[in-house]
Length: 221
Image (cartoon, rainbow, N blue to C red; front, side):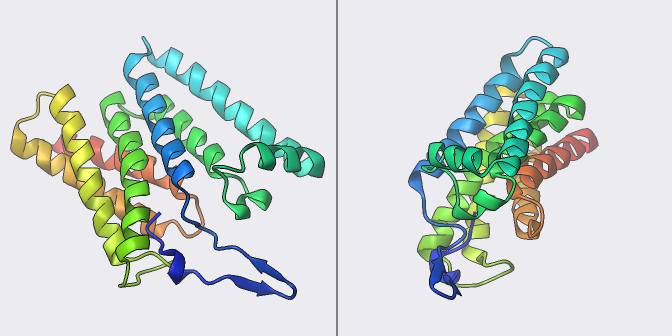
């Protein structure tokens, strides 16, 4: 979320001015973090992978059911968009919303990922993605791809490495140098995944990419 609002102009569609795709939204950032903490609690506290798969599948099925319902019924779409208006971007009215992509990523993590790596994946998304947006909107000057900025991406890496390192320090037995390498690798890959998320939603790509990076680097160490 490292796009600067000033970098994304409104789109003139005749008499209609479409709002910026990624507006500054403190409520959405808080929701983003709360969702990550909830996912972290599931990953860390549920007693088995079977439980984790079952709960994640329930959320994913519910989310995709709502997506199908709002495609079939404009009235349902209007009600759901009104309900989630504090945290929804305008473009999500006609696209699969970010929360659906997020719970889909959680289901994939539940199915195949090592839990410790998945915990880092959801934390980096929940903390570093909003941090990148905040830094990008405030300080973003050097444009990269898809409206994102170098400053926002650096903010992503710094925030992601700090939160990943803190969580690993609290939950793993890795020595400090190895811990720092794992945390930095996860944060860097997450920032690259965000930059590359021009077609897929970054709420899907970031947790999967970070988890994969953390799992691979931990295995190598």
